[in-house]
Image (cartoon, rainbow, N blue to C red; front, side):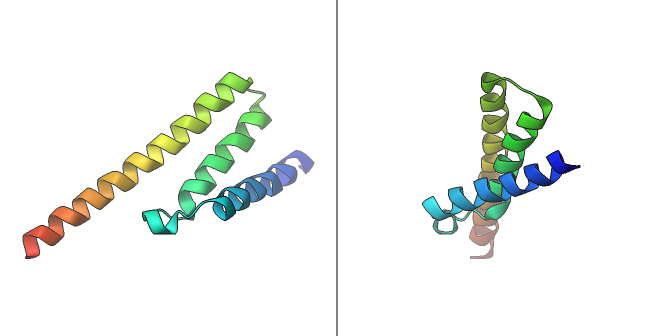
Length: 84
């Protein structure tokens, strides 16, 4: 149980540092992306993944969320063009 609580704190800290050092709101992204990336990093450690496996997992979390947001922005843009 202690490992899980430690992991939660680590994920929160990772998310906070990334958020403070970057301005995601200006780019139209929210904290969900940061939660996914931080959680992936921490769970990778809990699972005992290697450095390379962890980097791959974090990259996948980042890309998957970025693609989702890109798709949503394109859909929103297309809908607004139809209204005009």
